[in-house]
Length: 202
Image 1: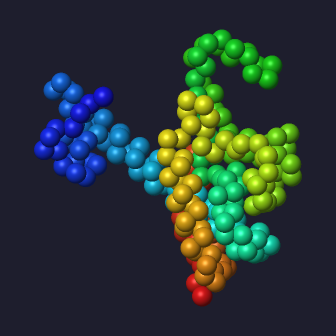
Image 2: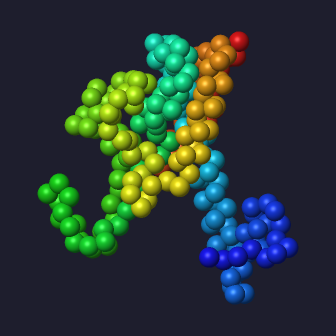
């Protein structure tokens, strides 16, 4: 693993610039790619988790009342919000060998577009999948795929879950309501999130 120089800066981006492994440093292209990855994976997805989750609760007064009445159940609630309206809707994978999926032959190297948002609403896996049920994950509910699976499971999942729990609990300690203004989603095929969530705070 590359080791930082002894006098490397304490900030993350400075450390990335200074990191070296036997004199081999990151190229400008690698630095930019890493910065984009950190922005998208570490910020954009969590922002959309919180925004999508808040909107789902504001649109369902009964579930919002349950959320407020059960603050200790925030971890289970966040899991259901991740299933119900995930910030990442799809991902791309490549077949490592010739195989077959649901009767369709796939050759090695074939690219697969996996619709995680649709998988999270699969009625053969989740009972009444189009209904928001914050108590769903208090039982033996199947695991959602919003953080991926296996070796592709999101490394930032624990932090995203924690941020979601804290942000939504603190937000709904207040009297929050939608303003009624039109809502607009960002034009992005992979990431689902609002450009803004206009609310009033009491």
